[in-house]
Image (cartoon, rainbow, N blue to C red; front, top):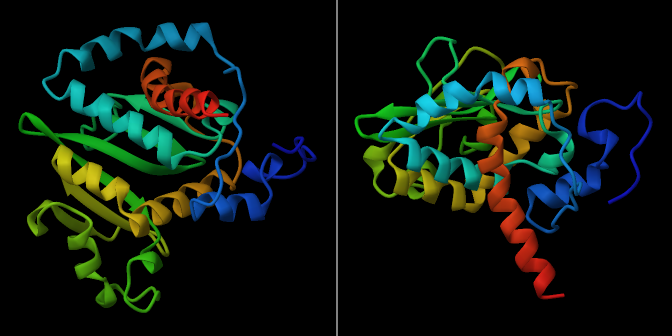
Length: 232
């Protein structure tokens, strides 16, 4: 990884130039992350009880499984940027009763909710990545693309949150959420949206970061890196 750029540079451009970011979006490179995580013990302890409450929910195993995949595949250099450029909240008090929520800058990126004994996900992406003509026309949503990205058409729906070029995709069920994260077009769209907001500057939700959840988000990536190192 190249050396950090000028402190006056905003967002992840302090660490990754635009070519590196484009290559990561397209899956053409594996970014070298930091070896260590900066951590606040006070903040870790603050949300231990809330994390314990989540673990008692019937959805806990599925939540942690999906968070591990999301952290591995959807966040660039997450150890280097943890809390300051992205954060994850446990049972946030904001409306909607999410089980977990990932944020960057002032924007929600991804949330998981209870759906009976299972889970459903809300992915925020750019609308233009899911229209047939890459426009902002809400009437041009590529529903066939969405349906191909999940197990059954009934597992996916969408909403139009307030804001230009923002699109909310709701996916039900562990299998469909996993398939959506593995779909090339969907993954590229998630990465693009996440970088858009991480590049806007420091994360406004640092105080609600749950290190216990972040541990699970980073474990999947660390396992992949260990496996890659073993093949060198």
